[in-house]
Length: 380
Image 1 (cartoon, rainbow, N blue to C red):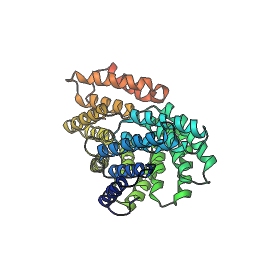
Image 2: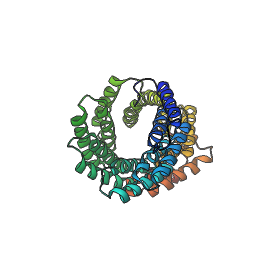
Image 3: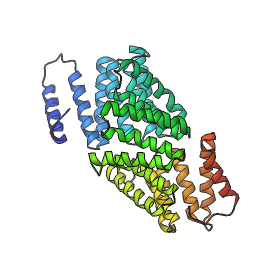
Image 4: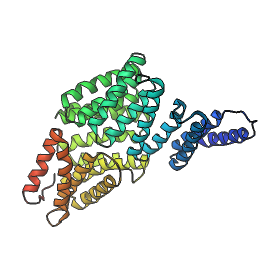
């Protein structure tokens, strides 16, 4: 780990690699492989993902040549490649990498080895990122069981995994269980990091969403506001602040506070654009909220612009299909009766929601009611 500037780290690593090339024969090459990985990590920090991919690919090839394809030593650069893919939104490729890493570790070290915890966690998160929450739950439960056995009580990893599992319950509309699990996640995070640490903001935000889903708007707003305060204390312009802001925007929409919602979603969008760039799939959420708030305020043109962009980003990325469904239905409502696309978008949203089963019954009924009648003009 380099404590100075990233440019210094790159320069020192390149110099070390040049020295290695002049070393006598007999070096096993592990130092060079680690240097390649270190340079790749620096490139990730600089958001130079193509360069990072090349460094990790070279490191992986070096590790396989030195150790063999099934040696646990190849899992480091292999996992780093998975990080590059997940950072680019290529979640399927990241999952494929996770499957390879898990298979290598299980063969070499056994199915209950703590080395599996990180990869199982990443796999679960990748499944969740693509809306496959049933698939996500199994690796996350397995990772938490391994962490509880292998790590000290109160370890942050157990808190993080509890947060992820509670979030899956929330997305599946299992609100009571989500509130229970996420309340425990907040407690665990406070124990491991301290009650005023910014890490507490993440389970707090997800608890807020669970409470919002349960209709407990005051409780949800209180959790989101506390999360915002914790993150603002650590840095008011960080992209992570967008997540509780999205929650506050959703509470404002649910209360009919549309101007407040518009302001909150606009701030969340600006933070995410600054942090992730203008084409990241995660921008779908603030854009959808912005579109819904604009429509409710009578700004149909503004709503259409935001929702067209939300749908385009969601369709081009590998994000949550349920978010795409929400964006499509919101755009259908914003288009108005003169647009033939409106019914098509609503039907596309319906197909996704129908696959979600009972968890999305309420949203499905709303789409069905809209499709059964004339195309609605009234903002909502």
